[in-house]
Amino acid sequence: GLSNTREMFAKANKEHYAVPAFNFNNMEQMQAIVEACAEMGSPVILQCSTGALKYMTKEVVPMLAKAGVDRARALGSDIPVALHLDHGPDLEAVKLAISAGFSSVMIDGSHYDFAKNMEVTKEVVEYAHKFDVTVEGELGVLAGVEDDVVAEHHIYTDPEEVIEFVGNTSVDSLAIAIGTSHGAHKFKPGTNPKLELDVLTKVEEKLPGFPIVLHGSSAVPQKYVEMIKKFGGELKDAIGIPDSELKGAAQSGVAKINVDTDGRLAFTAGVREVFATKPGEFDPRKYLGVAREEMKKYYIEKIKTVFGSEGA
Ligand code: G3H
Ligand code: 13P
Ligand code: ZN
Image 1 (cartoon, protein in one colour):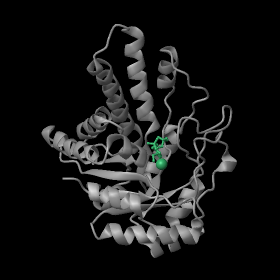
Image 2 (tube, helix red, strand yellow):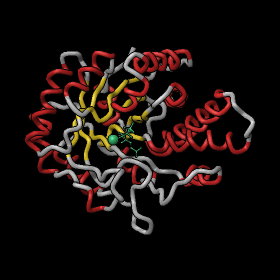
Image 3 (cartoon, protein in one colour):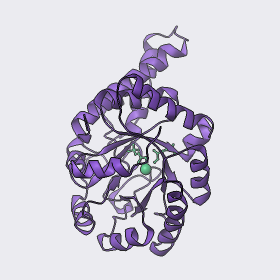
């Protein structure tokens, strides 16, 4: 069955790699993620946002995740697979996810002040732990995808707050803000795409061995940006996190790295290529199959070059 993240993270921190947390919105993306991770022998967190849960429905999501576990086993792999709620907004959303069969949840109280964030997070942890569901909290604010992302919009995590937050709430992992952001426009063209790795180091000094999470960590590969443009799409100033920045983080206390946008780009590039080069094609398997392959190929590469979770 599905696993929570407790043992996954303990092992990742001990062996200095990060567990991939890849978002999915449909069957093909789930398959791409699971097959990539099964072939790599990497643990995997199937990540589902509230929007994705609404799109796929609470009936379909747990079935897809369980099918993912079965698929991994059929491929001869015994990797742990978690089904994780991404950016849970409140206890109600968490309750719904847990009743649907999620093994892990995030409560995102990062937009509240410190005290309120602790209060809502603690409430969720008390509830979730009764079901052996692990909980991720967040401290610090990532610049939003709607904003024209500039560094001023980040509120970096204050390392002085993390001990109290974790101690008070009993969260199992902590997402922090060090300059990553959601979406395909993480840095302004011409600026230096650098993370505040100092903040990460200071957080790790405060919480040795504790699982840290990075959101907004897509690389936005130019290969896919170019493919999308070439085959009729529009994507201006799409810039992501350089693999070199993330790799160091993965080797440190960062136990989970979230990637969604890259999967969307690979998938879209695949669909667009088929539509542009085979305009007569109307069998969904022909374009979704190509998209699935492209996404799987990308994630295999990413696991090797950034996560370090191959054969873990
Ligand atoms: O952090 C956000 C994830 O990329 C999910 O995005 O709400 O559009 O599914 P979504
Ligand atoms: P990206 O948009 O960089 O892929 O981030 C995804 C994420 O953080 C999901 O929670
Ligand atoms: Zn996120």
